[in-house]
Amino acid sequence: MRVVAGADVCALIWIFTPTVFWSMIRELYGVGGGRIVESDAQVVELVRRWTIYDWRRVLAIAVAFLLSVRAIRVPFPGAQGPQQFGVMYGTGYAGTTGRRDGLGAGG
Image 1 (tube, one colour):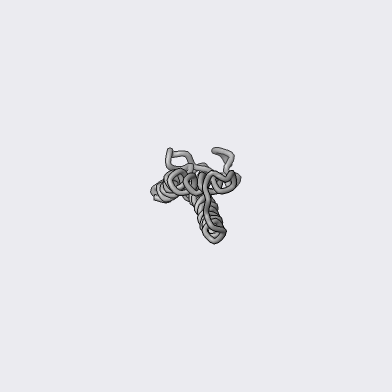
Image 2: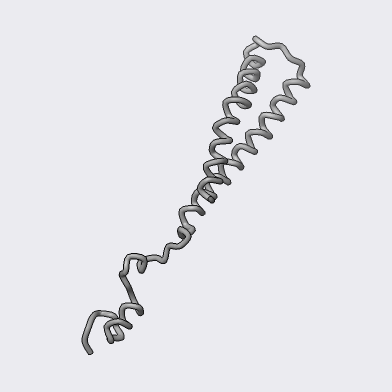
């Protein structure tokens, strides 16, 4: 579930970037190059909107990264660690051998 959440955020970023950002960047380059003529107020508003959207995108990337890292660290439901394959370590192994140090059979 957590991996899906991180993947969903990444997918939204991949959809959002070309559809929203590239059109704003194209417009900003057009204004800067003189191909598009807009008032100063319109340009300031476009830059402000682009900056807000870009910081939201940075935040979404950080959230996706943290969700992915957390998904790697959280144990899979139902997994019991090394004992799931019938191998016992430490005190569990020592209890089967009669030795306190867990090194094998004997006294």
